[in-house]
Image (cartoon, rainbow, N blue to C red; front, side):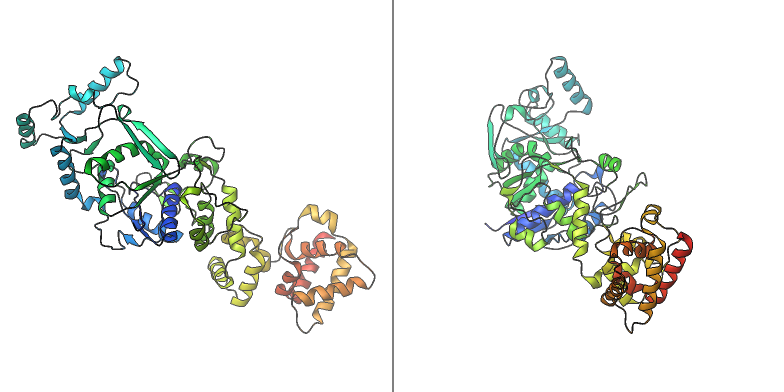
Length: 501
């Protein structure tokens, strides 16, 4: 069987980073096995539909480089790929189960359902459910005659279709991540398959769609593991071959105490969505990884290793590297702690190796002034190992465009001296005599000045950096000298000498 996998989010809001990881693992698995990655929108719960959410999902995947082969807005031979457009299909399959005695019509009102739960609570039933025992006390086609059932349907009385599960039967299946899973149907309830508005629930729709779309592997979050036994039963009821399942571990808070949530991310000050998201109800803006400055390749590399361990010491993986190395068997069972500092580290690494022309273009977009492209490129390259995010570069490199007005007091007290100032004045004169000036010339010139009387370089270099940048650290000092030029270096040294004398 060819590999066909799907990512099937619901358009109920912003795409959580856990959803992006699910999409990524599906994508990597498909590409590893030369299969097909499908985007399907599961919008059967119209009460929770959020305008703009579907477009947000698509844009997020595109930014991350997780491009579907088939699906909503991508085409394919198994559409439509939006569940709200497949309503009649689900109805026919639900009715088929009723006709075969594997499901039934239920006419219970909300009040009747509440009363049933209250009775069970009073009887000290730990988990009140509509199941093989309680269904025989409710208003459904199992307790009503066939004539009365049809009369209620003909009269337009609201009903749902519930699955009819056996009272005491073990459901067994092997999960690729978790191994064998065994659940007894006595712990399950007769879930609703078709709602009173004619729309299917997730349980029916995803089973039908996965079968009709020939899905070979269902790779989804751990939160769906409790539903898997029901889904196995439905495959059995329809007489279909079930796909293989792989339930992914949770993403946990940085301390490992509980599932990663938006609230936790907000409290700790890091993104939880791939892109900016503005809540249409409250207007609240949540900053995304893209807008926070993360490069998509770094974001993907970080995300891939949250719950998957390829083995070995290697940490930096391109998308092609991930595809080559990926295996569902190497996904961890335990939840993965979310470490934002690690995410920042990945971004630093990818920034170092970023294409210099792309880096320069991004840098120029951020600058509030006109800068000659070659000069901008040299500045950007000098800064890339000194920052975590590209948007930090204009501030980190402000000294390239503006002489410092303040100087690090601690450095000034320890490193600035009259001797250093004299040597720097002599250095500037020598620089002005050079025909050309680059980092190599700047370094050689300084060394010659210091060698005349054996002045240690440590007595001059910190003072020079302080005069040029006002700071203790930064890019290669000789590159700074070359980029500023002899005249600007001279002016800054004079200014520092006046302020710090």
